[in-house]
Image 1 (cartoon, helix red, strand yellow):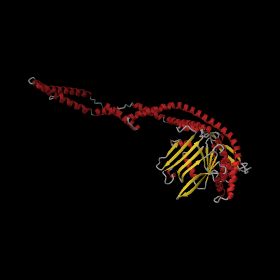
Image 2 (cartoon, rainbow, N blue to C red):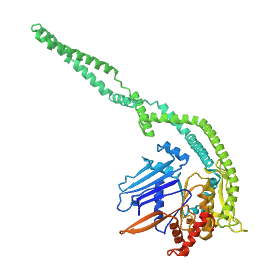
Image 3 (tube, rainbow, N blue to C red):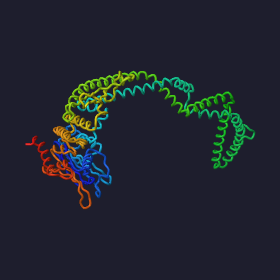
Image 4 (spheres, helix red, strand yellow):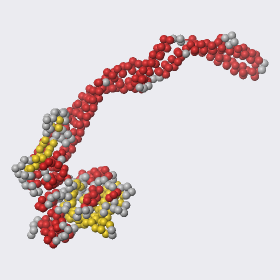
Length: 570
């Protein structure tokens, strides 16, 4: 439970400390005194969103610090897991800075905001003054029924089963769509695969064909040019090889006289050998030159086929070959598709059976719990000034709608919440038929019904501290006292913090705190004070009598407090 709450430089609070105890802790004060600021500070400790606007004017930081004791075991385990201590207590400190360097500490160690939000909801549950409006939404009634019956874990398990069921269905649907699309495209895919396969495309083939085409196109020019070069080099009357041969003979004759001419003679001999080699190569090339118009035509046809495929598939030869591989894979997938569909149908059937069996078992338990909560609610609202009120928890079905297997069958639709749609019906007037609570209950009736539900449900909860923010709004007199008694009952098993304007509830407190606003040196300050016995009497008297507190109001207040402390007026 929450033992200490320290607030510093938060809005108009410069420094405030709450030393809270077990049972019913009441927070009172004039409207606008700053009670909401205290609640906002507490919300910050539980992981609420922050803004630098909450920092008191003229200060650089705002700090909120809280000490919790007697932590639930689950929370202790989570804190150990996260490396934030092994003890049965927790200190949370949150610092908000104008510089934006905001920090969170758990037991002295820095922690992320996500962890604070996770544990905050396990420390305190806050009930706002308009929460009874949730009863006006029939979809919230099922959660109330589950909370009363302690079925939350089973409902959570069903959500997991439903998710597996929904996922299996989605996978089957997507696979079926893919298979049907592939079947529709099968003829096209096979035609594409056959066309590309028949073409027998090879990477680099196009470049090779272009080179061959160039040669065939200019065959005559190549033949004639090479023949002319042979004439010049070797075969003509004044051929270069013949002239160089005679020159070489003359130079060797001279070298026999002066051996220094041997070197140019060797160079000339080498050149002559290379010219003869070049002439031989030209002769062989000329012999191979083709004058074949038919071969050229076939080559051009092949290039035209390659270009047609490139235009059709909008890519290079390499791209087309990749398309063929992909098409062949799609066709192979099509062949395997039926086998995979069989496995997916089996998975779906197992998930469907698990989800529906779980939903039906949970539904049976909910119907059993519904009979019990009906009696308990009627008893609780009677103690809140609504005698002989009748309740019914109706399980609704979907009327006049065709089956949509596997989720809607014979008027029953399965969702993550199960197969139940429930709505609370009631009649506060004996002899009148029950009608939907959400449509026909007044605001005061909704408030009392919600408090009756809380008194039934909260005693089963594991969250140690409950905060009620003016849930008693709009009621008074004897009903206010009944509401106070309900809060007191809840406080027997939980620490309860209640913000109230009703003296009937304030008189029941185990600990009473007041928020007051004062002006000093031109600045506004909100102060929080724990009241002693005499101060409690004065505050309850103020709540009874308004601005002017009379002696009669004080006597009345003292009597109210004494009654609730001793259980009698003696």
